[in-house]
Image 1 (cartoon, rainbow, N blue to C red):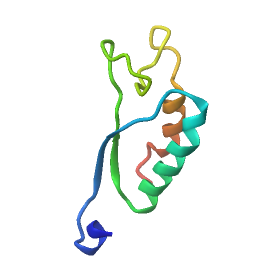
Image 2: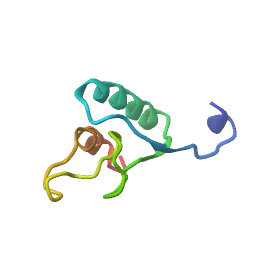
Image 3: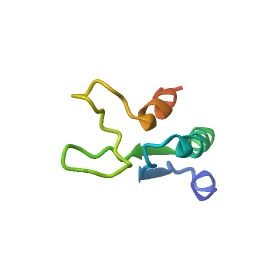
Image 4: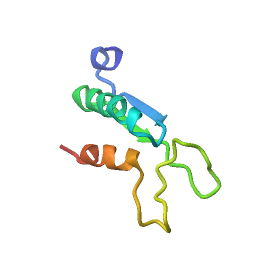
Length: 79
């Protein structure tokens, strides 16, 4: 609301959910709200040294996407 009232761009930096099916509906709802209110966002991705359940780094030599990546793919457009 504040961003809308002030005509400012809102940005949510570094969010993440565990790589489990139970968390994907919540992440979808979150991303739907980001899209609805035109809020920019960044998903925490990690890296080789990052061993958290929230990483979206592909597995199996970068050939298998995580559940989180599959969830956010529909939201990675400019429309």
